[in-house]
Amino acid sequence: MHRDTSGVMLGSIELFCTAAELESFTATAARAGITPAAVSRAISRLEERLAVRLFVRSTRKIRLTDAGRAYHAQCRQALSQLFEAERELTGQQTEPAGLIRISAPTTFGHSVLLPLLPSFRARYPKVRLEVQVSNRNADLMEEGFDLAIRARVQPDSGLVARPLMDAGLVVVGSPSYLQGAGRPESLDDLASHECIQFLLPRTGQRVPWEFCQDGQDVQIETSGSYTVAEDVLATISLARAGAGLAQVHRFVVARDLAQGTLIEVLQRHGGRSRPFSVLYPASRHMPLRVRLFIDFLVEHSPRAQAQAA
Image 1: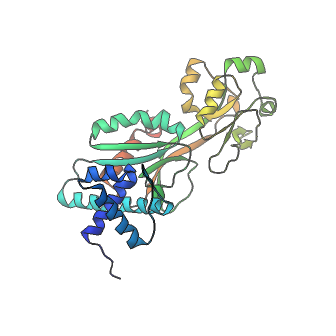
Image 2: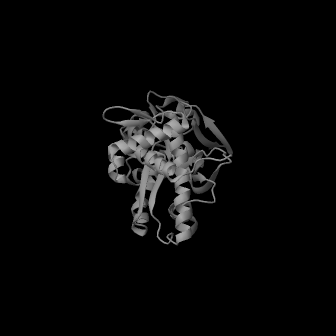
Image 3: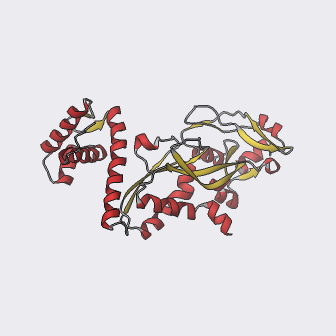
């Protein structure tokens, strides 16, 4: 089946992707060196060809429709592969450049990922980084992310997973809370404590607490007056303020434990952990900048540091 792949259509796709990212025909025109009317005409031709509306237009701003958002993710990936193929042929891959889009949860993002980014950019100054720090699991393909860091990795034949760390879980409380409520000595004691709850973004269900008891892995449904949604770091803020106990990853509260602002309890029932991995689409045409970043992240991950120690 013959398809129109003329330069005019490819140019329209590039303009569409730029407009989707800048959310403005005027800004797109300025970047491309053409008039806003020319951008609008190119997008209209693309919409006519696809028989679908790509943007919702207003006097001040444009935004993608649901169809436009899905089309943008596919176009961005296709253009990236075309540009990388061109760089390979012309020998321009010696210095990586361009944008890397990353999705990461708040725990790993604030504690591990973000502190590493300046070192990566110092090594590769032509690379730009866009980071979504959120506990919402973004769809890599549909939303145009190059990679994501995830705990609780779900099997997906279209994604490659490389381990970054095995994050131990701890139960912590503030000195003031423990002084007033007492220190739990057994798992049964948790029933009489304020246990700060966190809701999984994907399901809206409370996360059960995980322990080891008599050599067996167990999950316990706890209860409390405080429930947190979206940002798990808020459970730590509540624990610091004396609201109750929280079960969190040890690496997130390492400084609090060292400084004594939080105290670990139920150590003899510890030992449970959750793995963090970097996920990315399985593709032979991965851009050099993305491949280098993944290798850098794995090399500097807590797992690699622990193996080197």
